[in-house]
Length: 152
Image (cartoon, rainbow, N blue to C red; front, side, top):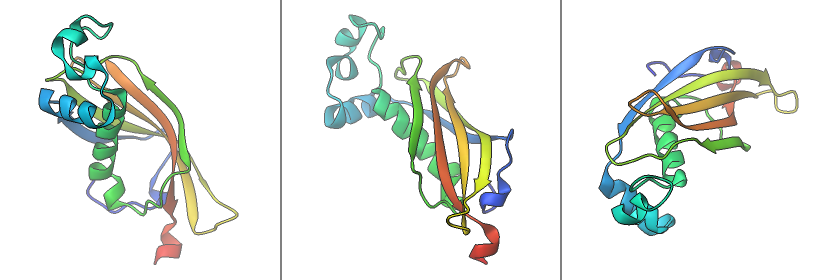
């Protein structure tokens, strides 16, 4: 994103590109060792013996990679004030070493808060796709943004 974005800059129906990231084996194992040490996230043979078809990233690692892309390509250049939570999170396919994930954010709705006139809520559907354009994860959530006229 090239310009700083406020609540008023989000329009239902628009889709924002959030960039891409290639996932390494070392990242998958390091994340799993610290946060989700299930065998199929740590060992290739255990991954092959599982439904995942090989060593695969934890779903929480996948969500974290989306969060990094979201921060780097939108939130850090915006008036973001946080989020009241995630409404829906789905993992559709495993993420394997060497996969390149590309993220998008579709603006579903935007509404100003009457209770806090300086803020607006923007509902997004985030999608991560692999290099084959197959969705690996989707997330529906709301993010709070400061309104332009209040910030200036």
